[in-house]
Image (cartoon, rainbow, N blue to C red):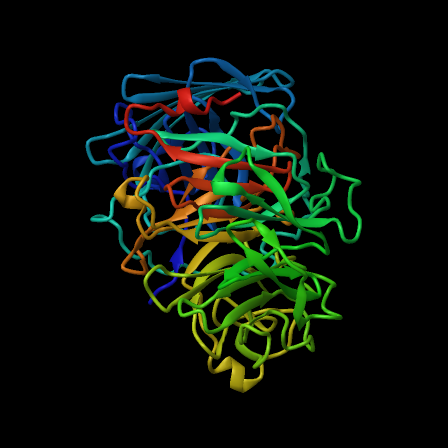
Length: 566
């Protein structure tokens, strides 16, 4: 099967999206023969569109960001300051079927007016006029849709997925060369906010605060009596976040909410060392810490946990990636444990690292199930199947667009390249050739999520509340980048699936964490995903210690009413 390049593209819209405005979203390539311009235009254009927001991001012919925007604002007809440019302002508004953007730069006395519309051939036509110290310049640009183009820009907007009937596999796209752009450290500061309605989703969905007051909530599971369990790492997992300075060994906990009621929270297990993955099996609760997997006798009726017993020692593996993902197979016969690497890229690590390990429920019978997975942060079985899927964080420091994190099915004895190669047979220039026995069996992952987006947990949706287009699809928490010149991630992405196979390109389903007003701060970081038995979706946010809930309210609910942009 071909790898799907998951992009934030609005190829078409669901009935639940507003349809009065044209859909410009997608990747576009300049038709030079039909265009004319007084200045040198770029070769590609990426358009991201939601009901109330619009973004146009330019890239060069190699797909690298040109650091130039033709528009990034709410289409409300009001003037807004641009976060990454102190003296820039922008206004976006609809005039019939045309989108008009007005930009002004006070420092150099320049302004730009752009009018975008679709012609009868479905091409995107832009009329551009700039006024400044060099006089008046104009352009008439014609863009042709380039479906399946690789993702080149981050996003904080929400676009609609293709309907199942129109979804198709995207053709593989060549990855850029290593160091095509320099490696940049661009860590985002998490800032506190009292706002409880800044996150937004698609038309008809409501995003609301479900619970708060945690240190760093991560993974969630729901028990047979409806109770919801949450692991809390117990320390600041993000530099300079609102919970900074509260890190201390043994401060992690697992909470339980009786009946899934956010008002009924109690501590179930405490004094843990950075707990992450949790799982329920028979009458036990399994908790993954940095250097230990323990299980606790668990009484679901009384919501109590007995004394913990270490069943798997990970002593000495506490450095580097500390998240441990847990999952039992559908038959409950084997426990799967994801353990990330200690280093970004290096040989000679413990074979249990950068791997998915398999054990008997009592911790015996260890075997390496799959390897070459730099940091397998999420493990889940596709509903009704025996197919294991994993979310994996790939390596850093090869440039903005390398290496993409991914979501992939995993089979026994499969190898995914780390540390020698990535995304199949692409060699890492920092490493020597892979051992032949591993190189020969290297597997290319199924779905690329974007470079440095930091995929954490994910979950397949099998509920009845959301529209049928979401059935079987995967929601992925993208924790957010630190190694890109322009940030990416900080959203919950949806990947459509059909019969257990990726059926189209992904799109950002929940966004707003980057709506802080500048390019150096964020309002939180999504970390865990849980579809509840009543059909809603819970999203943990370890940046601000909150858990959010997404509900579908029907076609009559507008996103502006249910989750306003502040």
